[in-house]
Image (cartoon, rainbow, N blue to C red; front, top):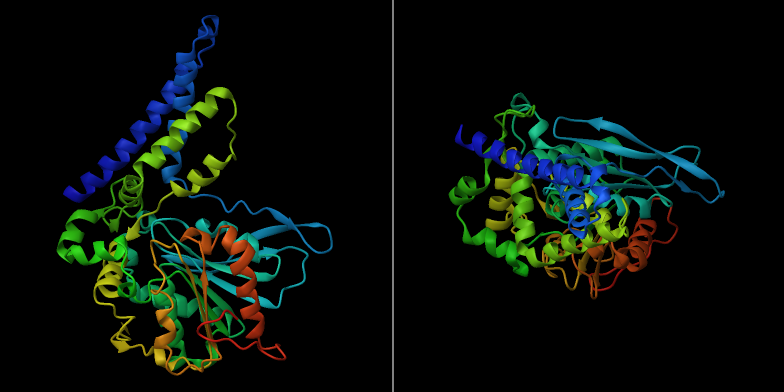
Length: 424
């Protein structure tokens, strides 16, 4: 009960701040006050507008906002988001482009379950749509999943990926972004032993913690500095009475957001003060740079407690993937069993979340994979976000990933050679 009260308290604080913002905006824009123009009232209205929007979007799942795009025929084609597989904790969805001939490249984007929605990869999806049939894992907010659906930990996550890969078939190229990279590698190894014909053709791991200890960061230091008991006591709460998942243990998105914001409090504070000034001057808009970023950044989701705790314990503390000792349903998953799936790792030289060295460690675990099917790319000057959604992704990494996919497609006449030290 104590944890449910805490969860509801956080939601009450969020809701109250949203109300304060709406009230300030409404009061300051009262028509009669126009008789007495005042900069203070303008600032109050702007503060209210920014505050209301800030706290309002914390509980709203962002829309994909991919309506259409122009194809090579010069026409705009409608993009429809369709569910291919629906499961309690996440769906496999497809971005179907109406009236367009199906693309030969079939890509499965594995989105993180790390507190933000899969829409965090919206720009990644947009960049791949012109050249690929794009599918993505769309994880659900744990607060909306009834307790009757059971648990969901790293093993369940891995088996979800196995099912999604089986559904799409062997002509699939998988791209895992950040947190799911180790489990995507494990899912591929699981298929290599259980159903080799269902394995994807290629696997691209972007900025993932395959071996977190290869290059320590604040994230890995935190994982080692607290005990699992302390972590459960500090971070885990039960969903309150407002949502369908009432009573489910979760790592609340609002709690994670507070942690993220506190790490760069001065930067975020300045960003919001600057936005209030822009609203006062009439220079802001619904889709300006500030709103585009914070509409996504502030939209957080709860993670199942089992998934959060088992990720910290098994991936970071015990390093089961790095030691090739990961088990699923009591059976060891041997990463060395991958012998045909081409694997590429991508890292950013300024990534402070999954530092260089953590992701490329995957290649050393692939003892059964020929060197010509391994590739690595280090993007100089790129941070964590930039390697999958920023300028570095668009201009440098995306073309390399598409080349790697082409080189390892079944219809490729002469697959391009790749090695551990050079990008394919």
